[in-house]
Amino acid sequence: MSKIKDRAKGAFFGALIGEALGVGPHWYYDLDELRDSFGPWINDYTKPKEGRYHEGLEAGELSQQGWIVQEMARYLTHNQGYQKDTFTQWMDQAILPYVSDDPLKGVGGYTSQMMRQVYHSRVIMKREWHQVASISDTTESLERNIPTAIYYAKDLMTLSQSVAENTRITQSDNLVGSLSVAYNLVLALLIQGEPFDEAISQKLMKLVYQRKLPFFAVTSENLGKPLVGRNVASTEGLFASPDALLSPSYMALAAVDQSIQVEPAWKAAIVYGMPCAIYHMLPAAYYLAARFKDNFEEGVLNALNGGGQNQVRAMLTGALIGAQVGYTNIPKRWILGLKDNDVLQTIAEQLINHL
Image 1: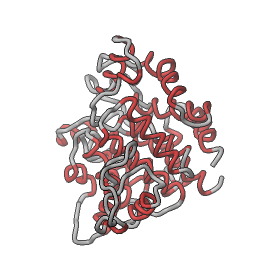
Image 2: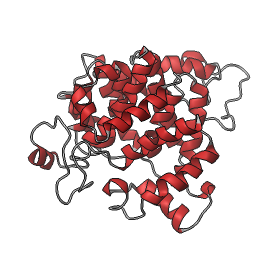
Image 3: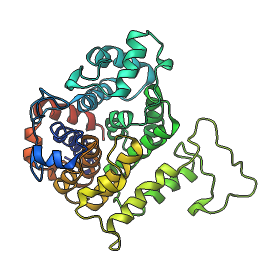
Image 4: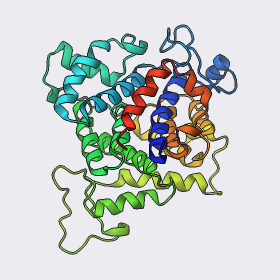
């Protein structure tokens, strides 16, 4: 396996492992209750407790978002990339029949608020696809597009345009779109072999100034004053600001700055916030992925043991570290412990085949 394919496969399995690790201890905001239920340190797949989210799933099984990521990878492979029309057809045929507008129903025993709203608009209200996007500020579209980042890892403009358009179908907030594109651009750079350090944002901003990414830069290079005569209004079709691309470098700096101490590392969840919103999830994932860039297990377990929306935190962290260490350096017990591992292997190989 080539190095880029190893990193791409690492990103895919890293995301799914993080998601599956979060199935049991998902959404415990009371950390004492979390420790009482699962012990002082969770280090493997667990089964949800009775009466909790995802009740009925087994240890190592994916819940709904992991299943959607898996199916998104199938979609991209089957259609040889992303197109809006084929995506909405796929959603109608392969996803919406298996979710619900009831939070405790659907694949994985739980359907997120964003997916419930999409289901209600499209299936119950019979609205057209351009009418179904919700104002949700969570990470479902970002997660769904992890396979898109893997598929288009060598083509950042197509990646950006695809993720931006795809996000707008189900989430209407432009800031959510900007942050979702930024995360998947970082993931693609890591798959390419770029290090997750303080320079990563500068590399992305260079592409912005070259108009190779769909972000509008008000400033000149190195965040200097605008060029004389340059229109400072955002260009139609572009994100108004590239600030979403700047966050990863700040998190990477915090991870190596000896005067900034987050100990134990799982407390990054408290520093950046335990709730589900995208602006809580991304900084913690960036921080942990930069701090544990060479250690998949430590990074993902610290994401997991922080409580709250730990399933998404572990999923996003897992993809980022998986892309850095590669599939070959992810603990084999977690790969083999995933339910239907043989099926996932085939899906992953097909997704990365063209890289």
